Length: 401
Image 1 (spheres, rainbow, N blue to C red):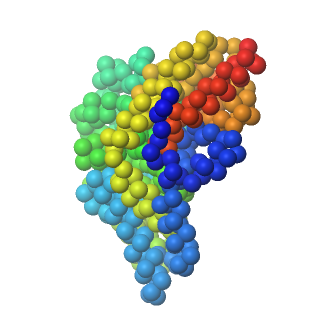
Image 2 (image 1 turned 30 degrees about the vertical axis):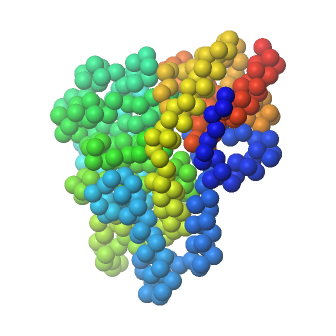
Image 3 (image 1 turned 45 degrees about the vertical axis):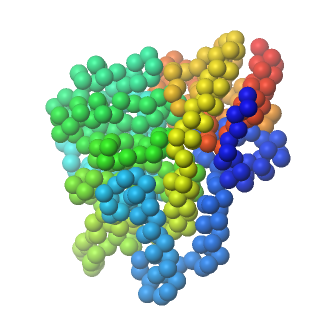
């Protein structure tokens, strides 16, 4: 397997991990960080910190410029129409919660919210709880055998009472792209808002918001080779105007007295308090790093590596891949072996994978599984990582069976 990653040297942690005998195959949970991000964070903190937007001194103005430059970079990277459509959050989870609370007044008892059956808890529970608060019906779109939303059944379930459709673009369990254009056509016919959870997808396929034609798109920086603690929420201009404010405090106020207050519009009206300034500035560097890569070369590398992973799993007796993954990950079970036991043995051999229900417990219940082992790949992984994984897997299976 001579497949090497030309970007591996851009991620200093990998050399340190390899020196410790560790192989990182858990990028769907969080990614390792490129030197460009580390340099940006070091430069920001070394140069002096300040709060954004409210200071009149030089340092505050400099930090504010860097913070807003990141908003412009995020808008450009997403192909949004304007930086004003980009709200910084603490992550994809907070972004979707912001929508669930901010849109609450738009919905009335008896109306429907629609989600896919493969959703991460972050794109299920906020809508589930909203439905309970407002007396709404939560409709779940079933999957076909490959793990895609069944469009025939979706056409029957997305009806005139549908007011919002929220779908993960790429499942973190099944690694399967969802048919968004067809689903959104059904949603638009009923006048519903559309929300994309892009947490898993954005790193493998650069989003084009205008082509996706959604009302809202959310993703997290830490899965984009960026820092933890910051996410991006895009909103279409008219959709942003439908949001009520959901967090209150400094920065987002226009005028306030003891009894009343008025609030800023998006984006600053939805960024209450001191934001994760360093992380936002770091995100700018991570997105610049990604924008500088050859997307075809990255996609080809990831596809070839993914093919090696799937072929290797299929060659092993008793191993069953969950669904029909298309991109960068594979969840699998082994007959007679508990996923946690297998992951523990792999971890003892320095192989970092993830076991359990992957924050998609309803999906696993529907599949009749208690969980699975998931191997997930980043652009920095190469064939040597998979060689070590398969050697550790074979030894683990010998011990467990």
